[in-house]
Length: 375
Image (cartoon, rainbow, N blue to C red; front, side, top):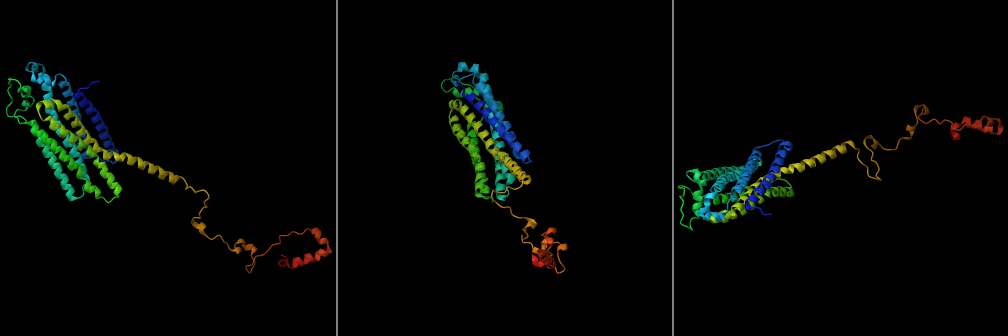
């Protein structure tokens, strides 16, 4: 099954942006329900997600319009009237895409920087963040104005006849070019270079602070690893800049590599959204760990401690008293004599029939007279 390059672009855009939507939704869940706070950094990322969906819709219409003609028809004047309407749609969507793409990237970067600002305690680090926020905001504003007013009359930017005039070198046909229009390729290449540079700066900004935290080294390295997920956005930005160099070589190259440029633009923007939101998803796993800890604490509170097999119970509390008890404590007061000595009661019962013996009666009388001596 063959898919046009333009179709691949918007299908990939739908998949990636849907994944970004899920990640941003989980981010809001963690921030609101687990942390109890939602800040500027979250709202900026949500706005970036909306613009990314807008870019995906634009990519879809770019594919619909570009499917009605072939680039080889640009060099044939007799076929141009039939494709003017479709070509006008392509130029308008490209004009809109250049602006929404810049705004989406700016919002992603501002979201990351405002998150850095929330935990920046060092004055130098905070100043670097504020300076980077100011630079990115002013640069995006300038680049947006430059794209909007590429021509003194903005509608000349999607003039179909002016676009076709680029392919008139092989024949003598001439079309009137719009006047007072600047070359947009220089601005686009410059924008790609600035995007790559700011991506690198944003990635490196928090690393000194993270390494300086007073936590175990393994936790510091784990935090650095989490924040380093932004390398995906830098790789995508590098590939897109390389495609931009190929795309800007000539009008024919622009028609050939246009789909690749749009595809890597989707990858770059969504990689930035996902990598900037992943650190917040760690709260989900921390919440599960806390629930397990609470369950274990409840189990320990309501169940007696288990004693290992063969172990003897240790006395607790007042049971630490010595096991030896004074022998006199066994006797109660009625059994103790005046001088404190125990009174021994007779514990041998003699039947009366034995008293009839004269021989034994004398012995028994002697025993009754001196009871203590008989024991």
